[in-house]
Image (tube, rainbow, N blue to C red; front, side, top):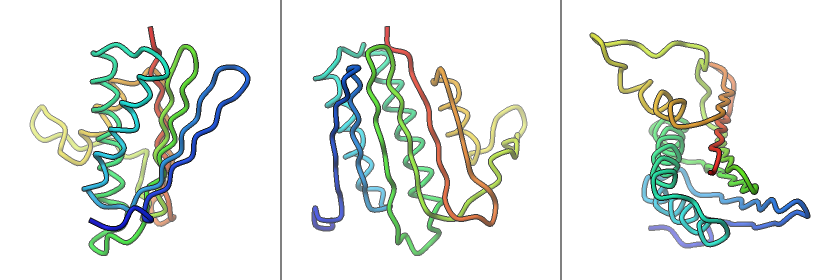
Length: 152
């Protein structure tokens, strides 16, 4: 594992009760757990139900895994930025990379009656999220995926 200097975290609070945490990790699979731990830590700031937390962990894992696996190709050099924005009634998570873009409008391929592996992660996130945005373009550097979950 690389030294902790490869990761960075920033926390800020706003007058309206919004808390933002920004985490930058190397685009390596072993750092995905760190992203999940930061998410779990948010439960110390506001109660998040077990089922909602499980859904958020799954969506976050899928989003970060996509950047780690696909953004930088075989070289694996790069980073992934994750921003958690906790508001009184919702949590928004944004995952950004500077890797190879892809066609975000392309419908995931179906194999038989099921989604191919390539489109499954995004389909899972769309299902879990109350709001979903994906910005990426084939041949253009960088991708941005943002999803929001309402907290009851």
